[in-house]
Image 1 (cartoon, rainbow, N blue to C red):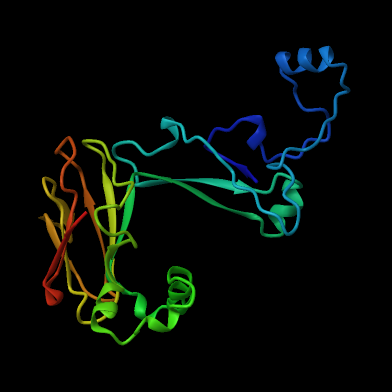
Image 2: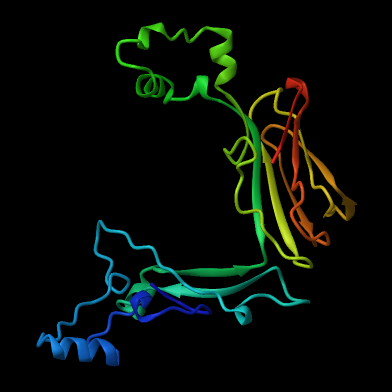
Length: 238
């Protein structure tokens, strides 16, 4: 894969070269001291074989992102670097978006009693020979499997909500579940714009999604958001 707009080293170059790749001075001297022949093989990034995968790692330079007055995302291209002409004409081409910071929050009560993995979890976490002692109809057991979570994380373990003062940040918030999942998301110390109104709290209902924009103006570590599940009378802070 060959991208536009981003930076990468030779090991992440998606172009399949048919000549010898550049060799660093240090690598050349070490090879000569060891009297080793030079063997040129394509990097994994340049030749992803059928049935295999490769994760590309690129650096997005500051100049590639949007500035004040531009759209929230700038568009570049990615395409196959094996045979760019034939591959792109075969459909192996697409957009590469460089966007302002954005986050997605899904707030819900995950009921693991309804999970496909309930029996598997019981078997793996119960001492040998005691699986039959687990009563899946026990009220305490049922409640213990209801996880009040945001993005699947509980107990203030949600990572990655880091931004800079003055950034234009987009938040995509969603709800899931049933009538017990009536959620209000509160951003302490910062406000956002939703439908041309400035607010600090937004309500999300099951299978409803909202998108809001924010320019953080409070610095430091703050209570990023709180989740209030009103019908369950439970309040969690993340």
